[in-house]
Image 1 (tube, rainbow, N blue to C red):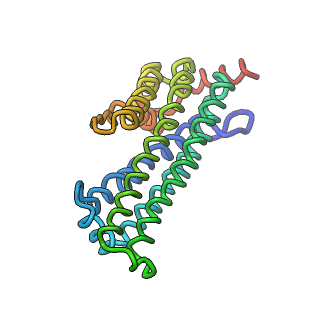
Image 2: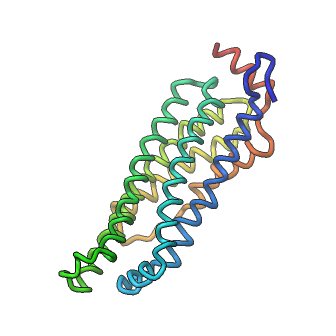
Length: 237
């Protein structure tokens, strides 16, 4: 579908953004939940190490999937920029900057998982006792978790300008913008609580991500109000 000027229709832009955004959900659930719950035994590093060695392919697939999620997130940010930049170009640029800042942190964080594979599979490390190797595995697991908290700060921050743009757009429901901005603070609360109060288990992932899920579904199913989107484009020209 094309507009009168020959450009890509806003409905196509919206649905591409929606499909990309929704694709992150199964990928993220696989890498963060399925692989983690299958291989990581809370409080038992020795059992975790044994499971990782026995299911190395699954562990590596989890790493690859996590990397794919970050790459897809980059495409989502760029797709949303094209859709929302007519509302406020500076806020749209800020949204992309926050998203792109989180990506290298998340990708480099997977080095901690590669380090676990090296610790458990490098024959040159036989000089270490099993307890010492397990201590290294625990160290890299903790580093991976803490680096994830840092990346989540930026996954939260990018939601605020996104929510502002959606709220002000006129071609998307305002409630989605409000939920996105609330989600920003959800991510920040969860991340900084984990950093400052590591013994306090706070999980408000549903609060943080509900706006993102609903926005992705809306973009895929309903798209945008084309007339109002085109009006915004004319006003910003």
